[in-house]
Length: 95
Image 1: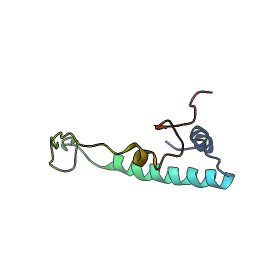
Image 2: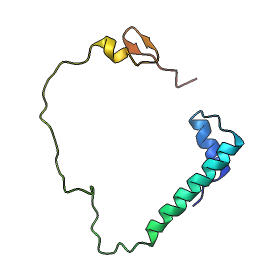
Image 3: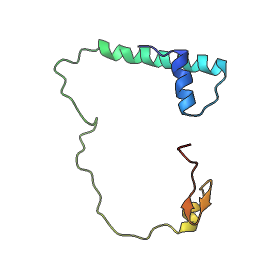
């Protein structure tokens, strides 16, 4: 599997990124290098290795559910790019 320049252009369009021709070429090469490295994992002999869900022997890590004060609305909205009536204002997704 390899990534083409058209793949990078398509993803950039979906992400609304304006990439130069040099950037498209650079990302195509970088993504292909990552895929080639990941292909090395297929060379490993994993016969007899049990599947795991986590690398650490941890299970059911939970904290006690405690009711507490929430943040004041002013503090929540302090980093919002746009706000209206105490709510985050986001660009329309559908045109």
